Image 1 (spheres, rainbow, N blue to C red):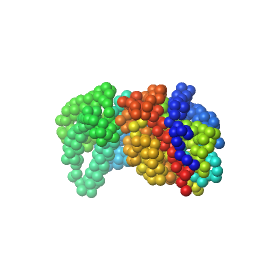
Image 2 (image 1 turned 45 degrees about the vertical axis):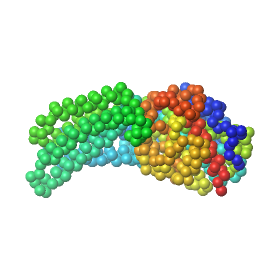
Image 3 (image 1 turned 60 degrees about the vertical axis):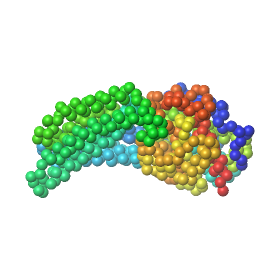
Image 4 (image 1 turned 90 degrees about the vertical axis):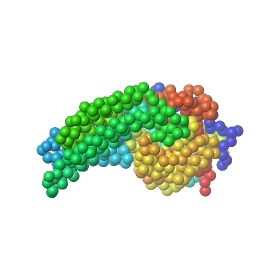
Length: 526
């Protein structure tokens, strides 16, 4: 087998570029947004099943069940409920028994954190054990198999996902404010926990020692909240201003370069919160330090965190977003891999894999915890691991300047396989594609790669064409639509200047070249 030459077959051709663009266009126009376990997700599975049937030796759809209502996105509003409930109980029943109520409030928040951990970091639908009234819903994976010319000795799986995310309302309306709400939410939860734990410890000490009061610690915590929470708001706003004022190289060191612009709604949000926090703290100042108690302190914290609780309550919408980049971009690439292999089989047999089976996988329910990938790997890992099987998860391919090849997912802690990500890097280098091998930042979520690894397909890696400076401007919002993808093909050195005019077609072509190169190199391995 020989590698591609320009004379034989051009992967990054006008034909293949148009094919990928039209796939995305057709799905968006014919089906639209595709929420997990919805009829639209099912229709997209039918669409790609029909498309892959033109190229694959066999195509099948496999159904599975899960709980989309218990995704981490759904737990964020529930977190606001648990915090508010804990505060309400603490304030109302404090005088009856500070020991019991501080214990209950502490357990409520720990329970909430446990569920967030299980559902986000572990992708386990643990809440279904408690909230039995939630019913499972059905989703599906579409699997296309392309057999090699001779005996199957190796296997390469290319994975993408069919579903699109629930809309993140904070990102939709406040863009950069998304970071403030997420950071502030985490800080406020831990502040609430600290106060409950302090009261719990003091209540226990009171039982054994007597004469213990919380006046001193209340004063200390009041000052911390008065200084820290408004200070945090001001600090993040200044960080935003600095980020958009410095050059690109420096900006990338500030939150991965995610803040590249200051939008009107975000500026209004930040200034309004700063004024609100300063005013409310001045109004309450005398009250707080007159007979200080932890009940007053918890009220101060609650009032300084009200913006985070509102943000959590309305964090996401039931409405799904179009998902042009996340993740129809990857679906289009996976489908085009099938198209090209079919071209090779018919017209360029010397390029067609000799001993490597190629599987084109399009999973459901990635956005609610990589459930499609988990179902696939759980079913096939024992069989597939009998031979050299490598998996590549593609997600959000939109950056023409840089491809991120991940060694690990920061959010889930899943490690990817060096054989896979190093070979992807070699393919990128040989195809003159700029790349970076790195750990995926925890703030950018996860990929189907984590689901494949967790359920047994260990030889997996993921690559993402997500430009972090664009992240907040379309990610999981209605702006992730066809307008993001340039209708006309442009030279690859024309990257575009902003999030809404990137040369996405170039990014798709670059990813496609790497995938085909990977197949060829695997097929030549002894």
